[in-house]
Figure 1 (cartoon, rainbow, N blue to C red):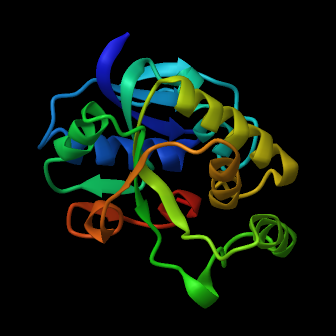
Figure 2 (cartoon, rainbow, N blue to C red; figure 1 turned 90 degrees about the horizontal axis):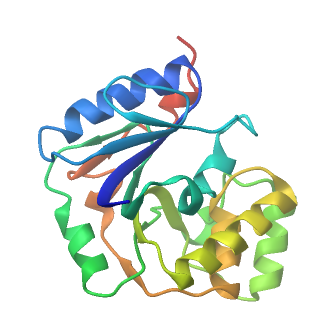
Figure 3 (cartoon, rainbow, N blue to C red; figure 1 turned 180 degrees about the horizontal axis):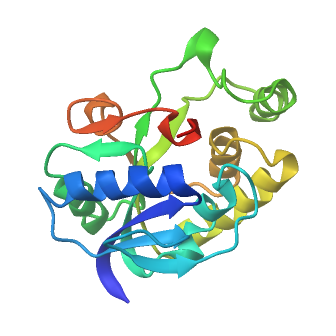
Length: 203
C-alpha cells in the first residue's frame, strides 16, 4: 500500500473527461500516484467498482475500502487544482484523521440540495444546526476511527441513497474523528477550483 495518493470517482464519459483534465492540473503541482474508482481514465490506475447509483456516491462512501493509499486525497472529477496541496497530507501526518472544507451554504441554505425528507430527518436527528461540509475535496488517513466513520457513512447513505453530505454529517455524530477544517480556497476557491455540476452536464 502506497503511503499517499489521490483518488477520483469516475463513471461515464463526462466524468472520465473531467477527471483527466483535473489530473493534468494536479500534475503541474504534484507527482503523486492517482487512482480512479469505478471506470478507467487515462493516466491513472483503476480500481474497478460496479456503478451502484447514478451519482457514483456509493463509490465515494466506500473510499476507505477502495483507496490503495494510507493517506488519500479525494477530488471530485470536476475540480482543478491550482497549487500545492501537500499541507493536507501534512495535517494527516500531524495526527488529524480528516481534512475537509466547510460548504459556503450555511444557515437558510444548509443542505439545500438534499431531498426534503432527508434534510428534515438530518436536522431532527442531530437536534442542532450543523456546519455543512463540502465533500468534493478532502483528505483522510486509514485508521480505526476513519474505518468507523466510513461504516457509519455507508449506513447513513443507504437510508436515502441520494446526496452524500447529509449522510456524512449524521455519520460524524455516531463516529467522530479528528477533523481539521480548511478554508474556502481548498474547494471552490483559488487553490482548488470546483466546476460544480460539470459531471452532470451532457456532452
